[in-house]
Image 1: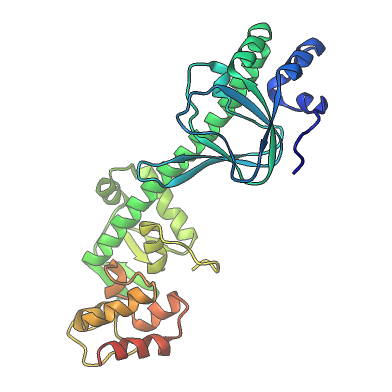
Image 2 (image 1 turned 135 degrees about the horizontal axis):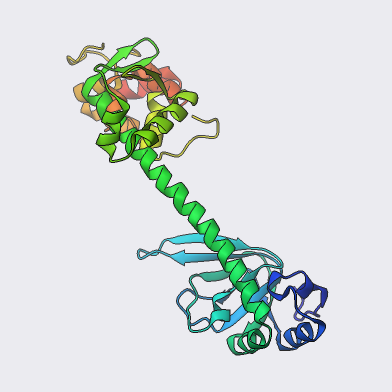
Length: 240
Length: 71
């Protein structure tokens, strides 16, 4: 990758954080910007470091990741061209929530916390734009949180059904019948969830061919499929 | 319902559960093949043939491994 880069002013026009700035504001933002070259594997910043710079990616791709207490890396998001990263530096006094690492050779425009802070004083639009971006990411995070919570409930219900199979399963044509009247309310109470959630989950499983539902009757049609849900087993490419 | 008594020989129609109970050495075969049968609630209900089908393994290959493990 080349050692230097010339700045195309059009880049800033395409970046949300500078949206709505007049020509003078854009000129000031450009004058304060510095190019940062990030070769593959290079880190723009690390998790928990004081957030002292804010960036816009011009070219390339970055991953933002966090390390768990036992050292496992979890990727929070990927950053593509024209996206901001290190947004927390705009607010000041915060630390980076993750580590930003280039996954391909990349170029970013960087602003020190001081210079972006001064710009934001004169152009509050910058702070509002950064807030909008952070709000959007928070929304993504909430969606993922909701998915994970839902997944947890689904696994609990699958475990409960598997326990019922172990306790009272009877092999029948087309699957394993739980050989006593079991209501959705029973399963809701076993799993600490609501009747509504159990009904919705069981109906979804029925559509996927995992269970067959009758009145107070539950047949596990695809025992392995149920275990895949309960144990979060990897699913083979052919869907097995 | 499959027999819950110890089986004398492992066949394609033996349940996975009774196979592992009668011949604990066969547990290693399932583990080695990355099958999740050991400890699974469904093992008592699934035959060796069904387990092989689930994991896309030839029934005869799995049977051969299981039988070899108890020889």
